[in-house]
Image 1 (cartoon, one colour):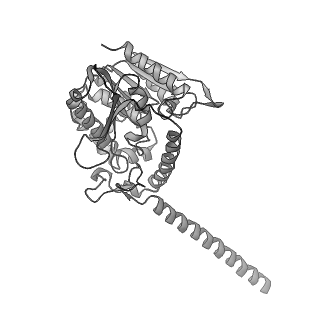
Image 2 (cartoon, helix red, strand yellow):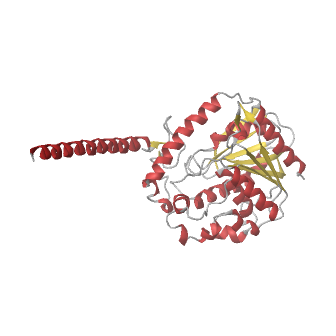
Image 3 (cartoon, one colour):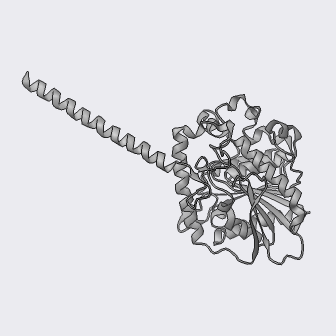
Length: 367
């Protein structure tokens, strides 16, 4: 009996130790997550463009539509993931040398409210004497990460080929939902439309482009530019632009995925089902509201959005859009070209080739 009692007490002690260790690990993890996801003042050098991680004394970054989204544990995890992605992307940029013979205008507010996400950049060749065709770029980043600086080198590569390039930022999840992000994009397009004459722009030739989540925004904006009915549904402005071409790099324009309730809540808000936009969360649900311009799509064998890009291309072709898909199977250092490779590394052999192909498509369709 005494032996059994000793064994029982020993077992309880071991169990208590295990529970204690687990509790310490959980508490340490929660503290670490809290530190890594604590908002930083947007004027700090340590500020990083990840949704929910910036704060300001002048305004609240978070919109009412997204209240409490930042408390979700999965959002916290994604914020940490995107912070590490920011470091990785910065390292990739540090290895590149962009052209320096370009005019660069940074941080132009398209909405003058002090929000760093309501700004755009403009790039074009120095000493331009003639009007040049226009490219408007919307960066990617999983709806939660990045600003216009993420695509700066890509946009410089485009401008260096003889284009006026506008690069826009937009607010990020979980500060806002996709609805507000689309509102931002359309406001930026309206500013560009109103101010294009201040730059050497050929306003008869405009290509809208976006990569990954930015590809979704570019596709949606191309439809919203034409459809007053959908503009009313999404409550966005009429930007008054006519597109010559559309360039979608690894787009992900379908978010109403069966069974993926978490994704819908994260990006469209907890009340997504009660919103007027609920029926329009996939490209195939809005595409019939417009006649999309000629569209060029880029993907690669190592692209995490490969199937999404191919599906988008097939949808466009089925709807009669003049669409062309370029699916790269090249290898870089014996590895398949990754997601948005031409945007991340626009100056190497593979990025340059992809950009030249896309711009060739644009030139072919110019007026």
